[in-house]
Amino acid sequence: MSLLIKNGYVYDPINGVKGDRMDIAVKNGKIVDKVNEKRASVIDASGMVVMPGGVDIHTHIAGSEVNAGRLLRPEDHFKDVEARTATTRSGVGRSIPSTFTTGYRYARMGYTTICNPSMPPLEARHTHEELDDTPIVDKASFPLLGDWWFVLEYLREGLIKECAAHVAWMISATKGYAIKIVNPGGVEAWGFGRNIRDLDDPVPNFGITPREIVRGLCKVNQILDMPHTIHVHTNRLGQPGNYQTTIDTMKSVEDLAKGNNTAIHITHCQFSAFKGEDWATMRSGAEEIARYVNHHTHVTLDMGQVVFTDTTTMTADGPWQYTLYELSGNKWINHDVETETGAGIVPFTYRRKSYVHATMWSIGLELALLVEDPWRIFLTTDHPNGGPFTSYPRVVSWLMSRKARERTLKRISRRARQRSLLPTTDREYSLYEVAVVTRAGQAKALGLKDKGHLGVGADADVAVYDIDPRRIDPSRDCRAIRRAIKRAAYTVKGGEIVARDDAIAKSVDGKTLWADPRVSPCVGAASCPEVLLDLKERFSEYWTVEIENYFIPERFLKHSAPIPISPEV
Ligand SMILES: [Zn+2]
Image (cartoon, rainbow, N blue to C red; front, side, top):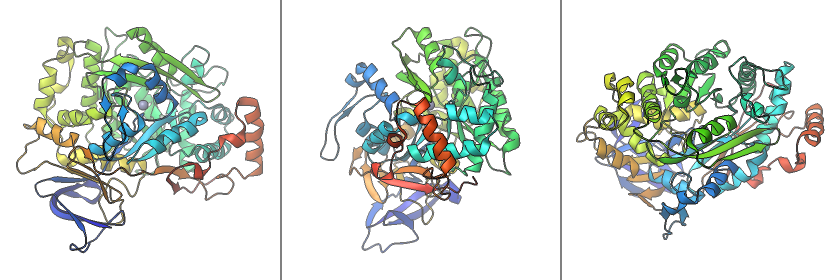
């Protein structure tokens, strides 16, 4: 099985390729040096752009939270229906599409790897069932560990190594990929109707602060040698004045960064970049955050861009969802996951004429344009929180074209426009930078060595877009760029052509990537007697589920792709 993608303009930032005309050869699902052209299938990519398959570091596409959103919103299904074809199954849903539809829509845009960033460990089984059901793309899932009682107790006692052993067990039990922290301590406090006020506010009943949780899990992450850093949704998300909490959170692990390595990822940063005292005085804190990031190498961010549309917000941050429910008056689901975490879901419409919504739209783009290094800020909408992932082509056009931004600026709230930093920001992304923020940078931050590039040995995940860089000027022809990215001319996944001109050519099963701490027998299967004993005792005390039913065996996954890690525990 070989394939030759001929004559395209290749953008492969990890290998320093910036639009050179070259061929990409594929054999047995991997990129190779060359193939015998006579025996290979050939894609003529003349006059087109070739990039590695897209990588999405943060998108809520599966699990109980997403499914509860689907139940809450029949109106989201009615208005967006995908009919069955010879190669695809039917599906519904605009902001919370069903599993098949999710896989197809990502593949049509040239995306091949996605991360589901919010998995309550207790609901991991359900999450993996849905991920197994999501075709074509490879996926990874991040268990929520920042409010897990074990973690809070171990960190309070200063037992970092024990905490690491338990986190390793949890990663292995849930087949997780990275440590997710949401409103550290605040989600636990919400179980008692409270929230956290700042990084040094003690968590009720636990006597530990969010700062200690973030620092503790950052150390645990390093001990376990996880492929990605801690993935953090900050305290006070969505509250005016929270930009300072975000900067303090980044600062809190400054001393833990080793060499040039990153130590923390701040997710959907737009929602955590507000200045002001209240909604009336709320304004952008993007400049301050970008300044900090431009001067420190230990941080990566993703945008969490807002798009003016009807969507569905969902996060483990229960208190924030309650605020949104109060602000919008829309229907709301609140969910508590035993000793682990919680969640909330609220439908939401971002309006151009709303000062706050328009300012949020501006903040996301300001962050992406003011952070100088594209390897440290990634394109997301925190799907579906800021808007559905299907709006990425529109976001790309805003990044690449000042004209596209101005067109939207003209239509937003006047007060938001007057305060926006966008009219004075000239920067326009190049195709190379787009390739960084939509695949190469994300793969690098995730520690996915075979993804996000087209070097020999990489997974043969490739996107071909009908953009001729000699003829199209993205700054002027922003609509052409948007159209081309919306429908990849070809998407290749694992060496097979899966999408072609907006149609799914073949539906394959993607892999489930998970971090496997099998190297240390003391961690992987919790075979270390003390750890196992402690876990068993606490399970009967804390959970309604027996430990034997909790651990997800590898055979449960349709296409397991463990990534071995080497803990120092
Ligand atoms: Zn999120």
